[in-house]
Length: 188
Image (cartoon, rainbow, N blue to C red):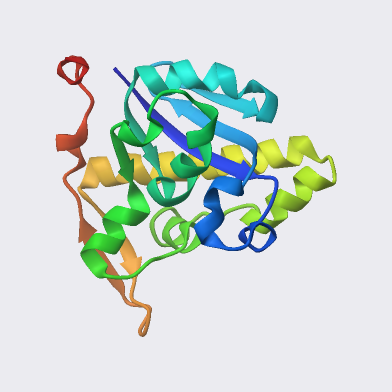
């Protein structure tokens, strides 16, 4: 079974829909995906979400950053299957469970990969509203790449480092993600 790394961008903000409790009102502008089986990145604009559905349904594991709290709930209304029942690994959720606090993707990327995001989510909304769709695509796919690289690093070394909030000192957060690998047995 395939492993997919996923990130979405939206057309609007929480402020525009009345807060986080109205996450179902957010509209998808773009979804970026990396497929391990195909060793390829895929792009889905809002009018192509029907092509994403079969990929999601056939995946043994969906990997993301804040994906259980944001990406998957926003995508939920676009599919007849229960997207929330898909096996998922949310890197932010894993860190939060171990440390008791959140960290941004940008901070985690810099601490572990010495790279940074090319923009932030509010800029992605601006890209969409201004019709700068290639910039939107490039930004989202870069976030997918960063998330994939963090997952790969966590898999290979069994941990990621997270800067402590007060001191900035690096704290090792260990993972056993090998137990979360998709297998054919998850089909039955």
